Length: 377
Image (cartoon, rainbow, N blue to C red; front, side, top):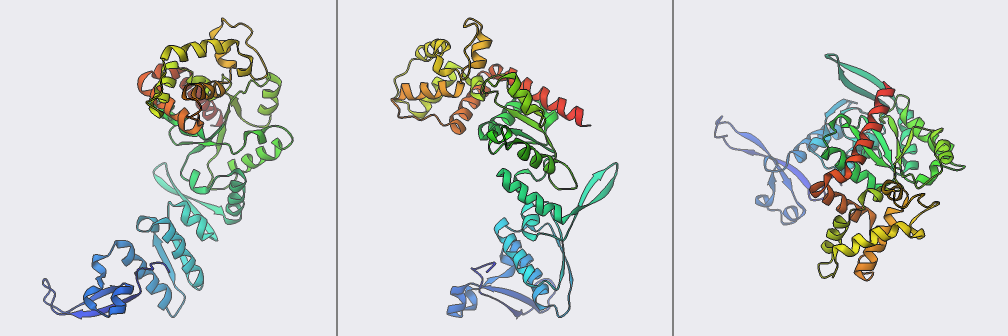
């Protein structure tokens, strides 16, 4: 049932409206309790219910009682209905398929659930509204491809373009960093995590890039992918070039995103935030980060060529592993480092207290995105 709390709807004549001095019709909405007790005073007046109830009842009255097939036009159902109720309403429409339904909407829920025969995409350009017909077969394929990537239409609907990044941590943190530095020129770009970056290399790489290419082209509702920004993971230049041949891919200048978060005080503050009882000295964390330059276990596939060259070691070290060990060491393994939570916490602390520490990353992201946008025009 669409509204399980509504069992019945009835109408009654009320005497003399105060304004018109004429009798008028009043609609009552009955709950199961009111109907069971058969007490009219327990029923709610339709005028006292939410607008969604009256809108839906009006629509369903036409859908259910019309003796002939009708053309039914519905404007923005998401403005008065919760997404779950939208799904239920559309499924009722499907039971009365003799009617023809036209739905104006900005909601991906409506499009996904209705599986429309035709989609008309309207856009305003050069002082006029322009119409583009979207092939329904392409939208079916679109949903299948999105499922393969582990995302949904609602994740990307309404974006001008998609920037794919390494994982959920980058998906959350990159927009905050760009916004902090005022890079509003790339607003409208949705930043989303790649489901599995390992798929972008090796034997399956051509299949996965084909999926992204199909999503980015054609007459679909899916916005174009402007490119991919991935962790370098100390890949060799040859490996990077091989991946870049298959798509518009750029690599961070450091091994992982966490390499940009190796700020002793930021790490210290977040550890204390997690457990205020921890006995930690900021100097201990500073010392651990300094000593890590010579610890082979923190370097993947390579060692710094010059341990005195700050930019070299901070680019090559596995920042995520180093922060994780610091968390474990100074909490006696009581606080586990969780990237999606603690990397965000450290990022937020830096943006508030030491934003210049992330300025090089913000500039890198801005330059790559603006370059892709410029080349796509």
